[in-house]
Image (tube, rainbow, N blue to C red; front, top):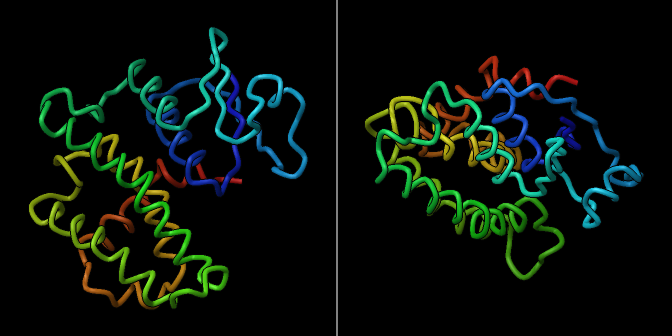
Length: 197
């Protein structure tokens, strides 16, 4: 199996997390986005990462790759099969993360490209999401259970991006549980293993 990836891409990052967690034996090919290999374009003409060649088919979306990996092996119940209501909430959180929060992160990170509002304005719009996640983390170390789930792994890369825009602000912001959750992930052996150069 071959995963075409780009180390800092949040979508590729979360695909690698799930594949590593599920102990899938995958060769990872780092793609220079300005020089996309012909093999990648033959599998997926859209030419974006991640793309997984399973040997039996091609998966072109990070969430599809994550779910495929977890169907093969899910030792900690990342799919939350023991709690169907939480699994449904996970799907809703991921959908909002991938649409609404992704757009907010882009505006915040590249505020100079969108001069209609200030970086602070863009950050304040995104804080609604941070406040919601802070509430979810009130009673437990992870978003939806006492253990990691698909939602945690799927949301992590964009939150990492958001936190990196103004690290000092994030370090002092009124979201200590979100900060602790993020730091826990970033310090984990799993995350370090998928970010190794």
